[in-house]
Image 1 (cartoon, rainbow, N blue to C red):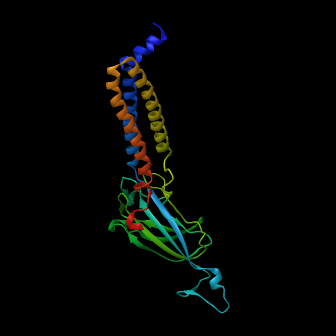
Image 2 (image 1 turned 180 degrees about the horizontal axis):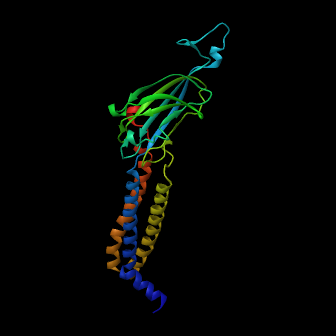
Image 3 (image 1 turned 120 degrees about the horizontal axis):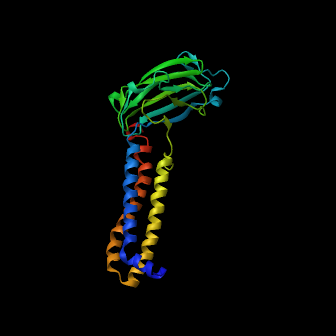
Length: 263
């Protein structure tokens, strides 16, 4: 059998459509399963916002003395730390490691004047804050009852420190993703999600190009069987592209954004 005759029978038999249908359907099912499976995790996330209330230049005036209570200050900065669960699985306060507790690391150049939780999304989210000094520096221990999805709290810290100070939240939580700082919604949070997007996108493009070429042969050889198969293949290719768009939108929205009640 010549190559041209074999190719003709291949396109007419509809086997190419069947192969593409199985590949596309399988990839969509696999991507959806792994995507939602990875989202069924605890995802402790925090954001830091520094605001200079009084700068050194304003306070460094002769005979001007600024006090916070009885404590003289050289500059006054407000640091707002929002902490929430960006995952779908609840974070239980009992799951916080005792050896590496959840804490706010105070920068060396910052002298804490006061701290308090000024907002919570739920009663169970209200944190208990405890000062602690270790050989590695000052820190504020944080404890709470539990955090469901998108639940969290807002801690305000007033300190005599620069607005450029770097504040970090550290600790370990059982069966949880590492504590991560908030990223812009324009930034992918997961390499695996990026790989899935690339994989499904490439498969869809290749499938679409192959489908167009095969339809050319189908019309040329007047193969009704293939034309019938091309409809579901085209539908699944379109569905795969929609799923890629869904992943892009999902990673730019709820799971990577600060909860509305903490804004």
